Length: 481
Image 1 (tube, rainbow, N blue to C red):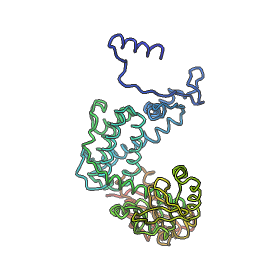
Image 2: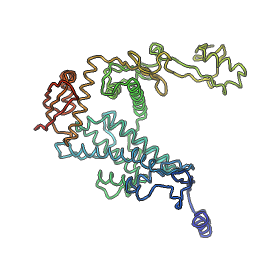
Image 3: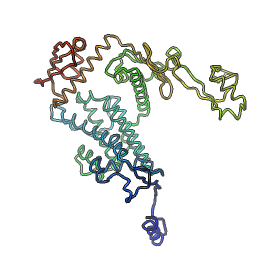
């Protein structure tokens, strides 16, 4: 190709137009076979193309290539697993959101359906506002990436957005879709229609199917590129919601470390972080996401970290401090490790760090918030603590009372009844009658939380039958409306 086709293009362009044969060029790396060697027909060190296309689709192969480091000059090892990862991380999540949307819009209004429409503003729910602000940022960022021919960068933007869409917006909004919220329908429709347009060059077939299914139009590839300015910008909301997601992720990690399942409610989560008190409007979101009864939000300046098993750690940057302190840098390092350091006010200047009797410049150290060794960052008898990315920490009350344990059992039964509904092929809006046969502990939990179980599972009548032992048995039947 270099000696033939490329060479002739340059010769003809120079001879005919006195200019290079291209306006922009991308230099990419080498495609390698699954054995790490250069891909070769004779070695056949690559997956069977026909098999990959039949099983995973051409969009999966296209995404694998365009999202890889090869378009930034790196080499690429082609493996079947790498292609399947694109299906799992991007294509399936996008398709599942589309399926979720069509399921609920078609079932709305007693099966007559809801005709969703493009709508960029007028939303009162913060999740809808967050989704639309993020969608505007997606259009803006992908436009910039593609304009600069950074195709893998555009893929990164889309992957990150889909993670937010599936693992945050849709999951947090399920009840609103079940309640047939017009705002939720319109917000998700607007997001999906926009995403299918910006993803069209990266996932042409999937985007085409989704866009035509949403709009009934001829082709997404004939549609205009979205205008990011149509979406209301809300940087403060996006920043706050991203912070909330960090808190939830950290809290979830604490649950996992303490072997406390998500369906088991806990009493309290305390968040201590800079500006945490400004997140008061999201306390209910955190509580619902982590299944917590109460969420306390405390500003870092008003809290004493030591009370929660948190301490600050001084790390001296020897490379930065060495030229100024010389041999004395070891004295500063020793002071930081032994605890012989402090933050003082000197000559009216706050926040001056003294370590081992030596004053450090701001660029010569970092202050890290860490879990005290006595806490270990894992669940103790009553609490677990963890540091938040970007500063601050969370404290989870891990004590499980009999009341909390009973509600946890009831929520486990909700999950089992929902699975029984799914296995029976019921529609999401079908009401049911439920009979649970189980040991007395489970029945007591159901009785104490009967309204919760009925509401979550659309059960009109809940009957219980005692059993001596064994796993709970669930029988459901469709009830007449």
